[in-house]
Length: 402
Image 1 (tube, one colour):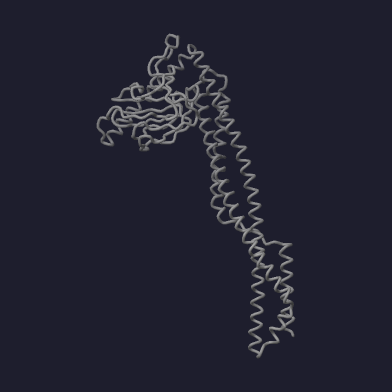
Image 2: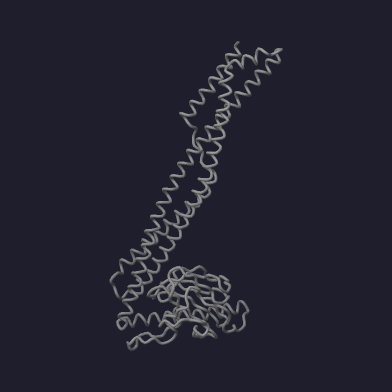
């Protein structure tokens, strides 16, 4: 009799547990798979903070130079740095958005799996509850009274306890799954909020970038419109480009010695962009109408591009320069052998660094309008036997647009 009271009590406890589970779900569990990806998101957040600090410093420097014509080159340099930083910020934000996409997809999948498991466990529990309701306590009395011996009775009691333990495990599993579902639903809402915030930030950054490009273009337009007044500035730019060319020749000769290269063969170039063959400015003298003003264009300009066109290495080689200058903006120089180099200027983004070995056709940057550049285009130069040559002889099918 005492044993039966215990059995009835355990049955009551089982039903009470069901009621409590509905009122007090278990503590939520954090999905393990999310933690690793979230760590990557946190790293991107830290990178974004660092870029924001850099951008603020550049903005302060620009503010101190604004409306001072004597510092025009410094302003253009700072604007180019600002553009570079903003583009890096955009890249970080886009990476965050991509990360949130992955987390949302993963959470949605896990949530769907949890809901399916909950349905299965709930159906199982309902079946167990139905059986218990139909059997009532009579089934437990029958089990005990049908015992043929004391040892048989103990065995039957053990069987009953196993049944009760099984029912409790089903209930516990159902409660845990419900907690996981609630946790994932909360995570899903948080991720959606983070995604919306990141997209809003991206819109602001893209607007900032457009404004910075417009300001940079306006400065170049002012210089071009007042070319006589800015003759000294043009002379500085010419001197800078000549100094860069001298450094290029020194580096390519040094690299040739290190690599054991012989004299490079002429030609063998491909087009540096695939989106346009419009030449907006040829190599050589350009008539400005102002005596003494710089008219020496050291390469060709390829127009008809925006800020997204890929730039290709026109010949295999080694990157010997990848940096920023006042005149060229973001530019890359590739050495193809003794005395043979190509230069790619005004990039919005450089994708290679000094020392990189590149193959012909490899993407080395993205077109833009950094440096002394009015509107997006690619400035392209070729040096053979140590001297600049006209790239148009190696650019078949070009369209004259000057």
